[in-house]
Image (tube, rainbow, N blue to C red):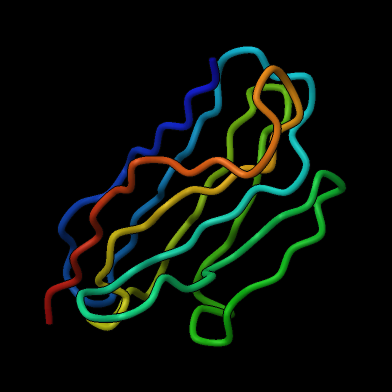
Length: 118
């Protein structure tokens, strides 16, 4: 069995910072890409940032220069450092990991709420 668990969400004022973490655990042979997505009320889930096993990254235009994705492959963990937060960043943030193991494929975490007040 494989678990994907996010943490680090919360309430912050505009201009503030938060750091999200996501850890995958269980019978994992290898993790390929890891990423963060978000879904605001009434909107579709959208990509925020992804990172490959080799460390290559890509970001949504709306977060470039403010958010940084990183990973610790030894800990099967991905992070999202969010700076200069804006009210429009308010959403549920989901972790997505591409896993090879007992369970193979893209798995989602349960989501963590980020709320940015103006």
